[in-house]
Every structure is written in C-alpha cells, then in structure tokens.
Length: 105
Image (cartoon, rainbow, N blue to C red; front, side):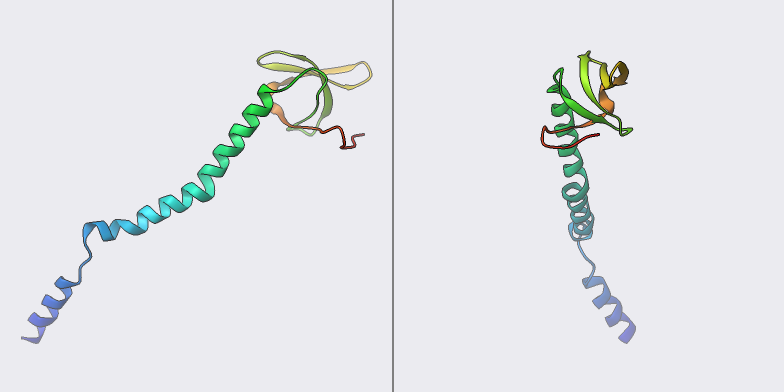
C-alpha cells in the first residue's frame, strides 16, 4: 500500500510538456540577446561603413595595413600606403576608418 501511494504521488508531480520546454526557450532567448543580436548589429555597422567609403578616406585593413583610399570598385580598393606604393585590397578586408584626430605613422 505504501508503494502504491508513493507511485501515485510521483505521477502527480510530473511537469507538463510546456513546463519542460521553458528552460530550453529561456536558453534560446539568452543566446539571442547575448550572442546573435550583437553580432548582427556589428555586421550591419561594418556593411554600412563599407558602403560609405570615399576616395581620400584613411582606413585600416584586417591585416593591419594603414593607407589612404585612392580608387574604389565594388570588390576592390586601392590603398596608398606610402609615396609611390599602392596596393589592391579586397573591400571586405577594411575593418575601420581612421578619424582625422588619430595619429598614424
């Protein structure tokens, strides 16, 4: 009789299907707000920065090369890194614009 009562109490305490998915739903929301959303925002800002590039802007590439934009095409840009030294770089390799107040050597 005790075993039957214990079994009946255990069966009454089982969570519903919705309650068992609550932790999974919370984890998905946490990952979205902490990882996915900030990455999407950063990607959008980078895309807007690449679209706003103009000849004469000073930029830094993902390889750390500093230079001034001389020509811009949809896929490539030409950077002047020194007197008489120009290199072609993929447009997506540009990571940031250098503001006029920043010092570069």
